[in-house]
Image (cartoon, rainbow, N blue to C red; front, side):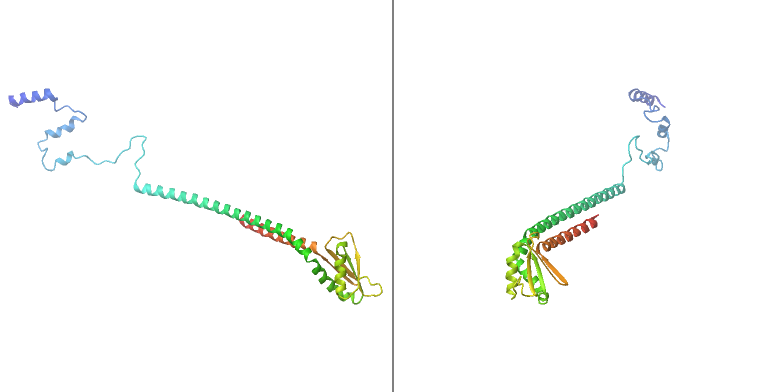
Length: 231
C-alpha cells in the first residue's frame, strides 16, 4: 500500500474505527468484504436473510390462524344456540303452566256459577219434576195404594198434581189411588213413593249435587291428565 493510501486509511480508522472490529456481528462475517469475488453475480445471495420460523417470546401465545377463529366462532354459536333452546323450553313450560292456571280459574268460576244457579233452577221446576214422577206412579195407583212421602213444603203441590189427574189423595173409600204422608225430617225438595212391590223417589237437591260433583270430578280428572302429560 502506497503512502497516500496509508494516510487515508489512518484518518478513516481514527474517525470511525477499524474495519476488522465487529459491532454486533462476528468478525468472520466481515471477511466477505475482502473476498475478491464479492459483489459479482452469484455471490450477492449469500447476504440475503435466511427464512426462519417465527419464534414467540417466552410466555406469549402464538397468533391464531383464520381457521382457529372460525372454529372458535362455531363453538360459541353452538353454545348460544343451546342456551337459547333451553330458554325457549323454559318459556313454553311457563306458558303452559299459565294456561293451566287460567283454565283452572275458569273451571272454578263455572262450577261456582252452576252451584249457585242450578239449585234455584231446579227448585223453580220442581213442580214439573214432581208431576212427571207422579205420572210414573199412576199406573201402580190404578191397582193399589201408592203412598207419597214428602216434606211439609210440598204438600199443597202434591195435592194439586194428584187432583189434576182426577184422583183424590187420601181417599179412604178407595183401595186404589194416592196417600200423602208428610215427613218433617225429609229434605225440602225430595219426594218418595212406595207401593206394593215397588217404589221410587225424586230428589232435586241430590240430583243437583250429583251433577256438580260429576262436573268437578271430570274437570279435576282432565287437570290430572294434563299434569301427568307435562311431567
